[in-house]
Length: 149
Image: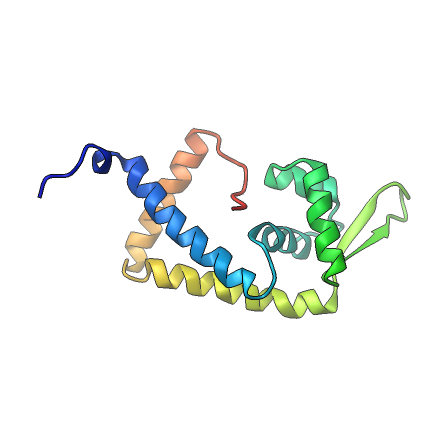
């Protein structure tokens, strides 16, 4: 079988697989009325003590304004609360609500299931190799922004 010039490019295959994995995950989250960006922010708030919107923006490579809009959506859904810091009233500390703490493991299970669906054909060593290669490329090219779409 002769490959087309397009199919000879690694980027083509990476994009093909990445789009399928990302789109399936986004659709699964949408069934719970959560976007990928909201899921990422929920994870960051849930895994950090004294999380602030500035810290989250820096961690995921978004502007503070964009993170603020995501936080507004999460707050309106009853998933995040903002409380003024006792040290500096201009700083708002973020935390998950009880509802979000119950929801986050379910969303993580969706992510795990999505990974399993797409990558279970690879054995553990192949998955580890793929992850290591992708991490190597991300490190080499200083790709740090967290994918949100």
